[in-house]
Length: 552
Ligand code: CA
Ligand code: CA
View 1 (cartoon, rainbow, N blue to C red):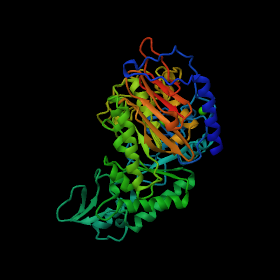
View 2 (cartoon, protein in one colour):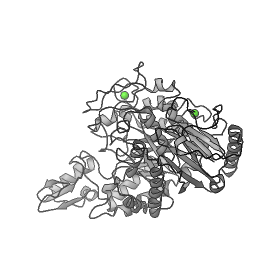
View 3 (tube, rainbow, N blue to C red):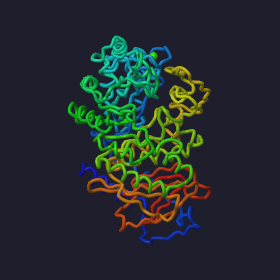
View 4 (cartoon, protein in one colour):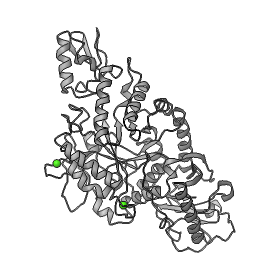
């Protein structure tokens, strides 16, 4: 790795020297002139063109969240399925790092695939099967093999806070409790006596109740008990042995109750998975907006917890883009990292703009492609593992009032309707997409092309995901945020211009130890007469509206 990074550094230096034609005169450009470089336009050279791309072999990946139901239907029943996903894997990653016809993600999070009475399948009736709507165990094994060929790590949703009220074990538990037997299946669940029904519990018989914080159809396991833990051990071993590369843990927030210490349970689960496969990756849905609380959960040793405070409509990333707050974005990224690392200095931050429970990010970003591009660069160029919600890379939108409306069919093409899925039950969407995957693949200025370029840049610069932010750099402009990432012996600087105007900033080479520009991303359109691409002239960095430079 070190050797490769040295090669990258040398390449960056050579290319940037060629590009900049540095004259040694470090011009100071005043605020009033910002946006107008003094020099004539230089020819554009793509600085990323010849930098080698590396394939990830560790836990650091660009993940893609898929709701199979709405992805691609292979057999014409209107419901997406495993074979449908297999047929679309070349879109996600064709396995060849030299080609750029694919998105380039190298991790997939599959939302629940196990048999369930609901369309979303977050209430499982059999932890050792595949829901027939999606296919068979053989289909799933084929999916894993196809992912392995392409270097994609596949993780599955593990819903073990609760199961379905139709799970045979719970049906049995209810019957036994009615007959006064608490030593059988009842031991797996949180079943207790109360005089008055507490919130989040449902009655079985007499004074006996079971815990069910979501709905009565989702009875919760007793995660502190031996019965449930033995069963969970078997479940994770079954899937890891089959070849899944880890788990996304559902509802981690609810692991904690009067009897169970959530940190202790998550620590046990992490250890259980690591003992079977130390390379398996775990990310938990611990849905809280208090960073210090996430930090406490990181004490369990889990690889990742989703960074909810940064996600969503009011989250730091979308808000920063909408308010042109580049400098404060960089500052909060550093602050957040420091808080999370208190819980576990090895934690891998898991960032995202939105997921299946939230409004699609195109909404709060005003359906503005430029802002969607800027937001993508903002979260994906932070250290850690970003999670792209399927369709986010093409700016899918729509009414998101109900959960099913947040999970509508992937738009593959506006003209070729092969593989289209029906609306999930309960969705009222009347969304008319302007572009699909096919259209955006042909358009080099599309959002999809921007995602592809971001991922390519990340694969060229492995320290972005693996490093730590060590400092922010004051550019003197509120809209321009800059932070330094260090990884082993190498470092780079990410600079975001979140302004709708071009900005010119000066970043000292001697103080910050960089030699040139190694990546450029331009989302916004320059004003007439202004240079439309990023340039570095000595220490003077010119950034068009909504653009990102990486200095190395
Ligand atoms: Ca189907
Ligand atoms: Ca490729």
